Length: 179
Image: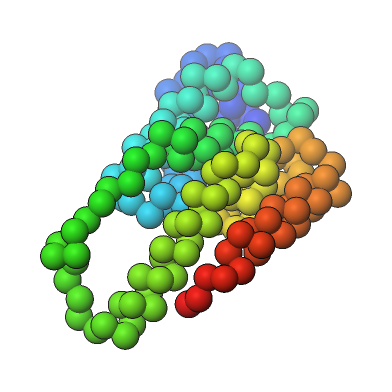
């Protein structure tokens, strides 16, 4: 029995706050970084990370180590929370006067790049939850297809098919975009 499973059993059987704290501390930075790479807003990323751990601890009684590792289960919760967040997301619009420009050349290129990434992310948010989950885990957390298959509980071949199909749609949608 691995260390996570032992810790989880303490939480499940005895509602151990110390064990819950250990589990949160072990995975907090990793999950926060995964969220921040997708949200790019510190406050929202912190809030969402907190929601993820609250949700995980509230439902930990249902966690089954026979089905997946705790890390896999936690990433499933995290990815679903990001998908839900993106559905509710309302972009903040800044006027041009509010943006300070130091180096126009670098800024313009950086702005175009960030706008493209935002547009791609918005575009991906229109796809089914599994496709979004696969995309987010592969792009934002550099998970392998094998790891994603475990998290999504899908065959690895299906994960690859969904990813490459979505990638094809993205390429077609943004083929005329210039950087």
